[in-house]
Picture 1 (cartoon, rainbow, N blue to C red):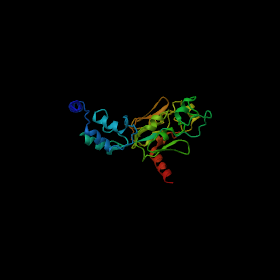
Picture 2: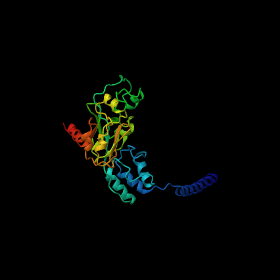
Picture 3: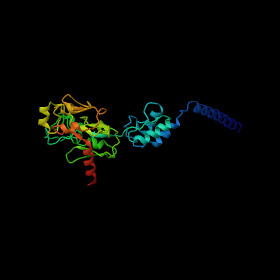
Picture 4: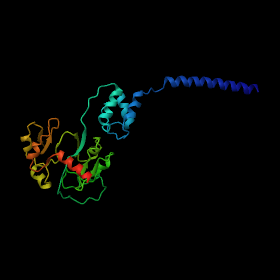
Length: 274
């Protein structure tokens, strides 16, 4: 009996010692979590799209608190989330202009080089012989960008070209990232003029392949009063910070390669309502 009692007392004492030790260790080695992380995480949209460059919304919240990400990093949340995040971090926030994805290709009447029977994915098709499409720079039309969009902001048009639903687009850049031919750009919504071509072929060659291609005639470059467009490697390129969307280049483009996107947006909205 005395032996059992002694053992019990010993176990109780050891338990108390271990308990105190664990309590001290727990307090000493505890990982302190900044409450701002939870506060920021609560206001995020929860899309976990990774557009911010972080592993999900919680990862973004932690990165902001640690100074590894900007308060404006959440493209999905736009200015509303950025402003709230800045408030939590105690920093000043200046509104930024909303951006949208734009498909820089409107190729028409182009014949395929061969019949493709592979995986319905632009990246896979691009590997096979440089792609089946007649233009080596144009859209393959398999809808990989549409599949990549988590916000249902894109759809394939009847011409096999992707269309962007601007009202739903969060400018996350996922569509641009999966396009093997880099045909999708993220640009400010105020910019209405775009060169819808990526061909680097010389004018005569490009014209034979696509009636909408840039032929590097430099008419746009000559007429622009703001020095906002230049022909580089046989392709007209817009310097968006300089561009005022005046539309003068649109008027002189012989192949209608440069377009006023205001009209395109109007047509897109009309398509969705009919």
